[in-house]
Amino acid sequence: MSTLALPAFDHRTLADPRIARNRQHVRRWLYAVALLIVALVVVGGATRLTESGLSITEWKPIHGVVPPLSAAEWQEEFDLYKQIPQYQVINRGMSLGEFKTIYWWEWAHRFLARSVGFAFAVPLALFWLTGRLERWLKPRLVFLLALGGIQGGIGWWMVASGLVNRTDVSQYRLAVHLTMACIIFASTLWIARGLQAKPLASPAPPSSLYVGILLTLLALTQIYLGGLVAGLNAGLSFNTWPLMDGQLIPANLFVMSPAWRNMFENVMTVQFVHRAGAYLLFMVAAIHAVAAWMRMRGSHHAKGAAHLAGLVTIQASLGITTLLLHVPIGWALLHQAGALAVLAAAVFHARDMRGAYPVRAMP
Image (cartoon, rainbow, N blue to C red; front, top):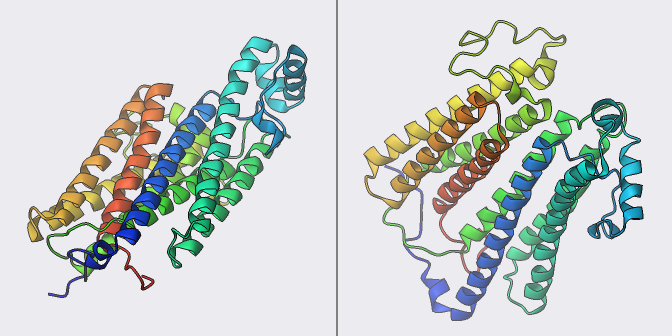
């Protein structure tokens, strides 16, 4: 049987203490950045659930780090908010105190976004200037930095969609913003995991790597679909399971014309597709775990597949509970954090089958 070549141990890394030490420092830094991204995504979810995302109506990447410090500054921010449709249609009559509540959620989200950029850019410069980065690693890290800059632009692009002619942001743009954050998160973990040399009892079949990558892509797709659900508040409708509107497959999935609009704008269809994506992810993860256990019982690969399948099962349970309870904020945020846990497990599982990065050769 053909097998995927995985190093039992990267002895070259162990033979050079300087490279091993540098990789350890870089790996810990990247994991810290990934944890900040988790916090950013969860606070972003709370910002959406509390309808706070449009409370700051201007994009001030530098000056915006300082919140209002006086009564006059608070009133200025409140007056700007009063000019947008969300206030005029939904929140007219809101008090300044109520405005401050939603303002602080959005400010915290933007502050965390700036913190992630700072926590990535400054150590990157220090590692680079002190010669602690291997040559092949530099373009990967610069690419991550560029993705972060693009994500900042996407965030404002999303907010701008809700400042004119709408009372909330576009679900299209919200889903893109969430998915890009998760792509950055997954990429960060992929690089960090590859810097860790660890013993593997036996190599996995090549097909397992492909399934591992497929599971990662399915997890990302499910997160994108979840972004559409959040953008349309689709979780507040059809709060039954396993039936939806009294049927396993609802009858009004494609009432909009052209048909493709239903996939992004029909509340019923968007929620149904999100459910279907969860079923698909669960089946692939379960079959993969059973196959891995039957072929390599007790191996690192089999344990990783079982761990991933277990997390997918827990995440599905969180999703069902959140739906049945009509999306309380605590359960909804736990469900969002669970999606990141599933994505992280899928990335680790797939990356481990590639083995550690070679010391001198570009992988």
